[in-house]
Image (cartoon, rainbow, N blue to C red; front, side):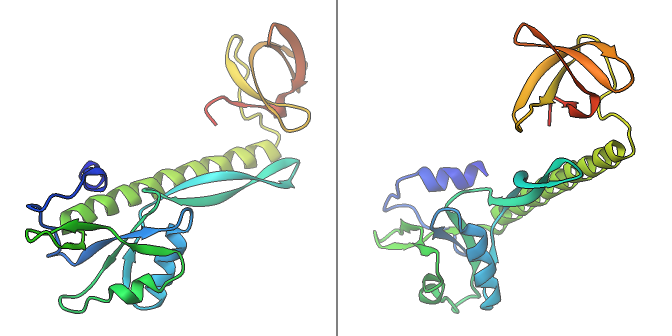
Length: 211
């Protein structure tokens, strides 16, 4: 990742030569369409890759009294995509014809001519590993959310009472407050300290702060 960012930030010098032996080239994309561009390129028969980060995003829909989360994938490196050509089968114009593509990153070769920049196979493999790791982390988070939701529906509180523990609280109109648990009030309510004021809320409205 650092090597790629160095290439992106560096100003090309005439003595530098692009790494193109692997056939992988750096595609410049319009903002927020990097993944769609990668899908479009693959549909057209190109070999394209866009490393992504997956994040649960709250929607305006509710289910069982709680906000519904959806998977939102975003490019790990905003504004960039990668495409591979077979040797002597370069089709830069075909890629640039795809909606959302601005062109190719270029660097100067030893003759001073600007040519499409490339990445080594090792660079691509590192990016693939980061992409896979990000997806595994996302799957683990979504699995935990599903388990927590099942426990909530079954009546089990998401957070066990612990005096002095800092937690997140669902506000009356969807706000996310932070408070400290003080004492239990019966079997289903908890007294908390928030902004120097004590409040009593249903246990179901209390969540782990890290979420």
